[in-house]
Image (tube, helix red, strand yellow):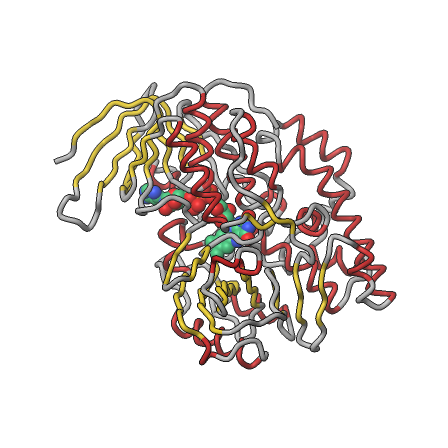
Length: 487
Ligand SMILES: Cc1cc2nc3c(=O)[nH]c(=O)nc-3n(C[C@H](O)[C@H](O)[C@H](O)COP(=O)(O)OP(=O)(O)OC[C@H]3O[C@@H](n4cnc5c(N)ncnc54)[C@H](O)[C@@H]3O)c2cc1C
């Protein structure tokens, strides 16, 4: 039997955006209930512990730490997580056998390149800075831009952003070829884009990592989730975990009613309908709109999904840094395969060892390997790549590239598109693929006719991962509460 409960503020989703929205609403005096389908908080930023190993299952590259601190500083609370700045930022190993340690110190990076490559690297880094600094106030940190703001941006910076060009054209124009080209192309995947189809403006994100730097939260990203969860609870947010939102029904003059299923799959399963005063939904945008019966006629092209292998490995591998990338022989081939919905034969492999910065993440003499490869999103029928076969391919590649002896693997778990599809439509990490200029614009946080509902999260405010998910949740909640939205 379904009961109906009146309530004040409902936040749908317990990832970074939902937690930030809940904290903001609670700090403004609202009574907040947060609804999350999984039994733990974090969403895409999951965490697992197996046999003495601790793994983050999602984000590992943490940028813009001041943005993650902002909810705490605004509320006058100490930020409880320590940062460790990483340098080198990442180690790249190219198919040619070359190793490149990319540092915030540009001279240290370019000293490893030949003169032509070094020139291209410096020029492209500067270009990324200029594009980022122009775009950041309008598209990154500020509230969703108004038409006059978009027009002003277009008039001042439109030509520089090269709206007619693709990312590879921009890189070629500035003399990047081979390894340097591939290094800069890869940043487009932070938006879930196919770099070969991405608009040139996406080059700006390279500045965030290469120019502004990367930090490691001591204790991992899981520690950040924990800190946000504790702050929310301390402000009285009620956590309703293991509860799935199944439908939203418009309710004229009020926020939509939210129909949930509590403890699905257990004997205690039951339905509840909430009649809230206000709602912030951080379920991905497509999912929220579909629940409201606002599905577009044509499904949006999904961004990339991912295939993650969590490996508890015996022994130590000093060549593998906190962030290490193994680049394929032909970067194009990876995306040609994924355009057809296939797993790439020779994908880029990204390895993150949080135990490098936080030794407690692995038992003595062992390492916690997070290995990620791009994967195509599922098709509209929910079919995706064969995850067991892809995991096998990734392990075989790690061996073939001389990184890992699989006999040293003590623990193995896979987090692939099928799991990601429980978090986001078709397992697409960033929502709609930003392959056109229009698709790179931030979608609105409002829904026509729904004055008491706001949308937030990585699929509404993409391109910066967890810091922007936090900004998005915070701004959506401020806007809903009628408080000026600050940049
Ligand atoms: C493998 C991987 C690697 C990544 N790497 C990085 C990185 O290195 N750096 C970075 O900054 N970002 C990275 N990201 C992106 C980053 O994780 C996301 O942008 C960010 O966590 C999004 O937060 P969110 O709150 O918007 O969404 P989510 O974390 O997806 O939160 C949405 C929540 O809604 C819940 N939900 C969904 N449907 C329902 C429903 N029907 N009922 C109830 N609850 C529901 C989900 O369970 C989830 O908890 C990565 C993501 C993945 C998956």
